[in-house]
Structures are given as structure tokens and as C-alpha cells.
Length: 189
Image (tube, rainbow, N blue to C red; front, side, top):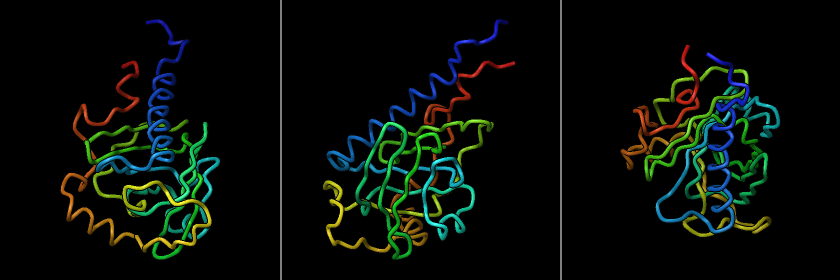
């Protein structure tokens, strides 16, 4: 069999990341539509990730955030996005390069994307809710910088409470067709 010199696998992964980038750009501009909300999993030690030492110690390898009721200042660029969140009553601003994201899931419509990170084999999808939950203000646009509004406390207990109220979001999808993995498009030996 011939070698894939075009690298279709990388092209497909870039296209899927563009879907996530477009969705987040729309939310930054217009707010969350309807019941949509997102679980975004990323590698905390990936190049370009910016978060406090406190958060990096608590989540040394991977972290999942939930954008739903209380987030602010969502800014989306070509290579990364930045968002303000509250973790156990403390405000944080995270900068997350799209290349650091390993999963994106919208439980309201059971849509998910799983990404293989550079130099790493695909991992199985997580089977539980994220360790950290953060949520955007209502269905309105994110609050402007310096608005003086302090977000409500959101943390691991809130994620568990949300799971109890929303059975759909109790586990990330693992059945075929629900999550698109780059492995789906790789050549099999």
C-alpha cells in the first residue's frame, strides 16, 4: 500500500478543530443558543496553555471545563481561545490552544469530537463527568471585561449536581457515530 504523503489524517483533524472554533466564535459573539452547552477537555501541560499554578497542581495532566451558565470574556482566535471561569469561588482566566483540546462535547444534542494530540495515540473517551464545571451567564452574551459582576461558585460538586439533573450529560458518548475520532480516518495496518 502507498504511503499517505498528503496526510489526510491531519487534514481531517484540522477540519474538525475548525468546527469547534466556529461554534465557540459564534457563542463569543452571540451567546449560547437554546439549551446548547459544552464540555471541553484539554491537556493542562500542552504548549501554550495558560492557567494558574493552583489549577495546574489540581489538574496536572488533563482538565474538563463546562461552558453553560457562568463564563465571561470568551475570546476566540485562530490558534486558541480564552475564557473566564470560577473554580471554587476563585476567578481564573484560561488560555487554551485548540491543539491542546482532546475533546469537545455538546450534551444537549449528543454531539462530540475527540482529537488526537500531536505525538500521542488516541485515548478512550472519559466515562464520567468532568472534574471541574464552569458555566456562562444565562443565555445572554458573555459579560464584558471589567463588568464588576462576580460569577457564582462552580466546582466539582456542581458538576455532580448537574449530572443528577441531566441524565444525558452523565457520561460522554462512547458509542460509534456519536463521537468522531481521528482514528476513524486512519489507515489500518
